[in-house]
Image (cartoon, rainbow, N blue to C red; front, side, top):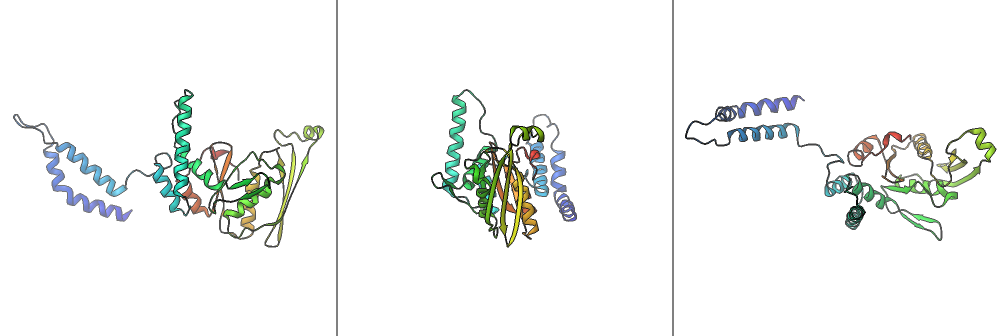
Length: 277
């Protein structure tokens, strides 16, 4: 702040003579004379001074171009192939065209490009014949919360976490689903859960277990809270940062709190108030 004040004082002293002249000449011109645009020059000088001292308008997810978004994500260490950028831009353009054909004037929203780009980066590749999931990024993990392989839902999730968290190599993963009877469900009074899923794994020789709500083919976000608790207990320097993908999926990153704050300057925080993790 003191540096800015010193700069402001120095610039004001330097600009005082020309600004005074501009102010004196910015009034109504005398008869037979034309105004030389002094008022415009004064406004321009003041704008220049404001930008010098306080910078241009800060970039946020709401006002970034595609190119600025990609550059910001890359500056955070996220690897983004040019081909993926082009494919995402085409997909967004096709979506907008579809809505227009359907009679909607929705247009492209500021979150469309960045969320679709990150989802494509982190979704990995799933083999429906073997049930094997292969990561496609070491910085982003994205997945649909309506899961195809219900019986291995959290096994796949933990594999996704290990793809972005260095040193998170869990073994002996087990998960067991218990579906409540109608009488049990009525007694418990749950509005969403249909039973429980007992999940366990071993990390660094320590066994961790957690009972999660079973909601059919829907993923329980409580698993993210659990993993963050494990990361803290095991001495990891970061945690999972979660973002909503705008549909029914989640996008996860790993890093410390400072990294999470930088991500939030680029990645839209849709419905973040509903996230409990």
